[in-house]
Image 1: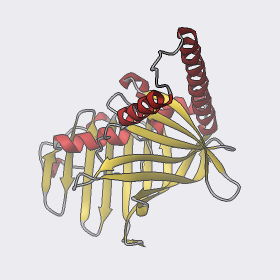
Image 2 (image 1 turned 135 degrees about the vertical axis):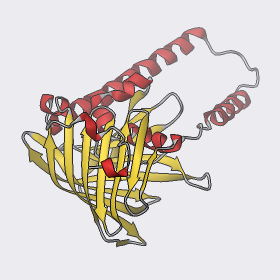
Image 3 (image 1 turned 180 degrees about the vertical axis):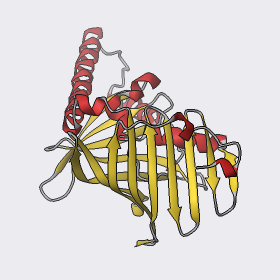
Image 4 (image 1 turned 30 degrees about the horizontal axis):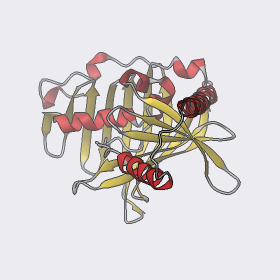
Length: 291
């Protein structure tokens, strides 16, 4: 279930961490504490490295165990067996804390990377379709039918990177990313979330918070750059879980930008493994051909 906080995808690039500065400061402090600059004993260094490796392995295994329990919480083999999803509901944007008039939507997903979302609202009908590394857009209010720009396709790739399906289905492994355990985080009165992080070779990171008791995805957190080039915190929050044909899925997804709510998805219905025709993803020859 590639549930997202907004059908309008987002692009992000992660700034490289400043770990070199921290390393230099540590070296400086060590030199001041040992004026003779004598090298550490080989045995002690090897023992420390072995201990660190053991601790890291335990840390990674803890993260893997949390992911396994989250898969089971959402349906286990039934969840992993989902190939298509059709979701219907309402999409609302927020401005200064107030919800704008909602749009109805129908979202068609074919895993791993095909999606078509249709919107209807006060401005008419709009369609956004992604098929791997290409896509197209239709807007009835402007009578436009155009191919997606490279940056818009990149937005879709980011949405896939930050989805809970990416974590639970293990798509991140194909990119050479690493999974680590971050510990428990506060999640309200007498509630805790287990936090894990996926770190990609390019430095981009996504934190996933999983309920410590029910092991259902609770939050997804990452950062992206805004139009001014500043990094802004993005957060998806999942709520109102329901069980459908043995699968446990969220029916409400709120998106926050810099701590302020920017949108909400509210599902009315979700269907699994319903046939989705290939024709839905093919770009029409012209506007008249759109169905």
